[in-house]
Amino acid sequence: MLDPIQYALGALSGGLVGFTLGLVGGGGSILAVPLMVYLVGVSSPHVAIGTSALAVSINAATGLASHARAHTVKWRCGGMYAAAGVAGAFAGSSLGKALDGQKLLFLFAIVMLIVGGLMLRARKATGVPGAQCNRTNAPKVLGFGFGTGLFSGFFGIGGGFLIVPGLMASTAMPMINAVGTSLVAVTAFGLTTALNYALSGLIDWPLAGVFIAGGVVGGFAGSIIAKRASGTGHLTTVFAILIFAVAAYMLWMSASSL
Image (tube, rainbow, N blue to C red; front, side, top):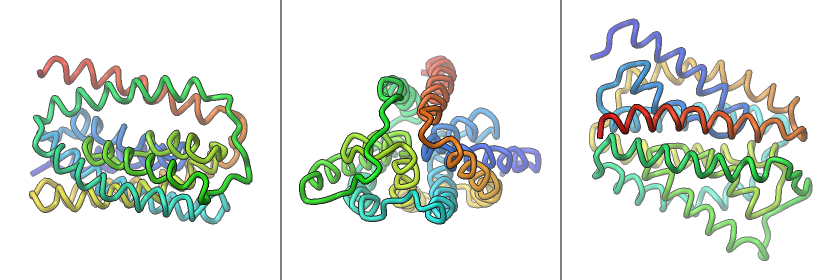
């Protein structure tokens, strides 16, 4: 059972995660898991992963509503991507529960570094504003969806930091559209993973509640700033820097526990 200070830190962490989700469409669980483990003080990495998956999925749905009002969501692409990824997320989360928690965090950080590098390489890509999902690119969209769903489930994350570049690579849509559209899949993947962890009793429900409450406020603020920064390339750079910073800290902390 956590104490009141830990719950307050949980609400603060939720605000930071919600802000990140609204701003870059990903990074929610990149921040959520280490915040729950290293700041809030959740002793079990698996409980931190299961709880963050639930919280991030709800916060992502809140951010999605804001992006929908701004007309930056490509619903058909998001639906296709999410549908393909749900099966992958369930399979991946089943594998993740069976792996040692510290090893899971260490592998998670390695993947973050790789994705951060890929995002920096593509930071000047503007994309095609009218990009859509059709028969021509459907196999690519579904393939990326299943693959990122598998990773998302395995690491217990919403997966936005994988979904955003996946959407850009498979459809050539601009960053701002990939950010908004990714939240459809982040919500679906997070709920799938959370359900799997909940079946094993690996969710702290009160902590999830305060985390979600903080995330609602942060999500609205982040989505407003994301809209203003659209098209400048700054979102991608911020995204990559965030990934590198948190990955380095996670590598340091988890490596010492292996």
